[in-house]
Image (tube, rainbow over all chains, first blue to last red; front, side, top):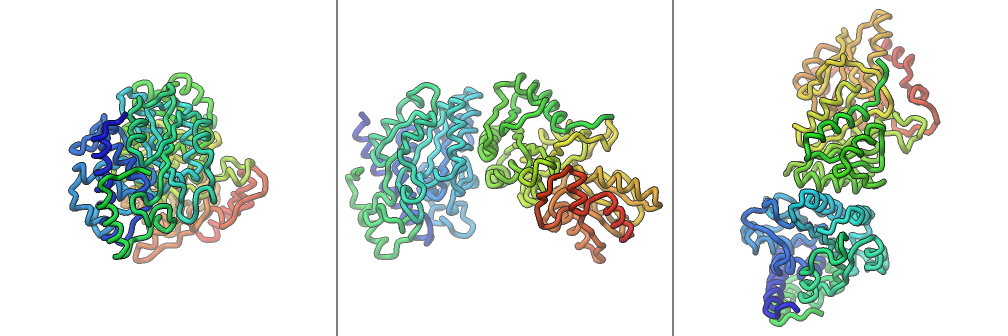
Length: 282
Length: 315
C-alpha cells in the first residue's frame, strides 16, 4: 500500500505540471497537449515518486537511471518536470518553442536531463536497450526506463528492440506504454490495432503488467517492485491512460492531440485544473 | 599478391584490438565472414548478432555508443545504409553532434560487389546518402592496405562513420607498407598531364587500368583515389586538382546525385574558370539484367573500351 500523503503530494505535483504545460502550450501557440497529459502522471511518478535515481546538478552523473521519453512530442510535460527539479531555470519554460530557446517541440540533448533526441517515433526502445545492455555488462546498476506511446508501437523498430531486449535478458530495462488508445487521425484499434497488447508483449518474452496509468497507487506499486519479478526478463507496463487527462473537454477527443486552446478554453482548463484539489484518477 | 577480401582483414584487426581494448563491441545484423567466426569465439560477451534487423542494429549500437563504448555495426551495405537511414540520421548524425557516439558502420557490398545477386543488393546510393548527413565520416577504401589504419582512425576519431567495403577480393593498389593519410583523405596515385581521373573504392582499380592502357597510347592521365569521400583535405585536394584541366570522376554509384562527382564539381565550379567535370557512373535507373560486374559495367557504359574511347575523345 502506497502512503496516502505521498499520493496526495504526487497528485498536487501532477496538477501543477499540467498547469505549467497548459501555459507553455498556450503561450507558444503550439504543442501536443493531449499526449503530454496522458503521460504526465507516469513522468511525475518516475521523478517525484522515488523511482528514478538522478542528480539535477550533475545531469551526466554516471550512475543515474536513464529515462528516455520516446514519445518526444510529449516533451512539454518532461520539460516542466526537469525545470521544476532544477535541471534548468523555470524561466526557460516561457520560451518553449520560441526563437533561441533550448526547449523545442521535441526533446533534444541541448536540454539538461535529456538522454536521447526523440521526436521521430520508434527509436527510443532500441537506444534504451543498448543502454541497458551497457549497464548490464558494466554491472554498475543503472536502470533504463523508456516511455513510448501506443500509437508509436505501429513502428516496426519497436518490436525489433523488444525481441533484442528479451533475448539478452535485459532485466534492468522497463518499457512503459502510454496506452491512451489514440494516435493523430484515429483510435489505434481503428488503424493499427494493438490488442491484445499485454498478451503480445508477454509473448515477446517481457514480464508484463497492466495498470491504470492515472492511479499513482497503481503506478508506484508496479514501479516500486524489484525491476524484474520474473527473473531475467525486461519489464513492460501497459499503462491505460486517457489522452488529454485532467481537462474534461480534452479527454479522449482526437483533435486535442495537438490543438491549442483558445482564450475561453484556456480559462476553462485553468479553472478545472485549479479546482482539482482532490485529484481522483479515473 | 593474391586478391584479399577487405572485410576479413578489417575484422581481424578489430579482433586484435578487442583483446586489449575492453570498450569495443562488434554487432552484426546476421551477416558473417570467415574472420567473424574467430571474433565471435574469442569475444562472446562483446559480439552480438541482433538478427536481420538493421534498424535495431543501429539503435542498439547508438545506446552502447552513448554509454561510452566503441561499436562496429556490421551488415550488408545497401541494407544498413538505406533500411536504417533514419536511425543513422537521428542516433548517429544528429546525436553525434552534441555528444560522443563512436559507432562505426561497416557496410559490405559497395556498388556492384553483389553483381549477380541483383538490384536489391546493388548499392549505388550509399555515398550520396551518407554525404548528406552531418557528423558522419564516409570511408571508402580501395584496397586492404587501409584496414588497420581505418580501425586506428575510428578509435581516435571517436565519431560516427560509414565504412564502405567492396564485397569481392581485390588486389592491392598500394604498397603493403604504405600509410594512408586520414588527414588528407585522398592519394594521388599517379600524375598525368591534362586529364585527372578521380575515383573511389573499386573504381580506383578501373581508373588505374584505364591510365595504364592510355599510357601505352601516349596519353598520360592522373589518378586520384579518394577514401574520405566527404571530408578530404580540401586545400590539398584543390591544389592537386589545380594541376589538371579536365576531370573525369568514376564511381559505382548514381551520378549527378550527390556522390563523388558532386565533390569534384563543387570544387571546380567554385573557381573563377571552372574546368569541365565528366562524371562516369550509373544513370538514373536500376540494372536488372543478370551478369557479373564486368558485364553490368559494360551495360552501363563503363566498359573498359568505352571509357578509353571517351577519355581519348575529351583529351
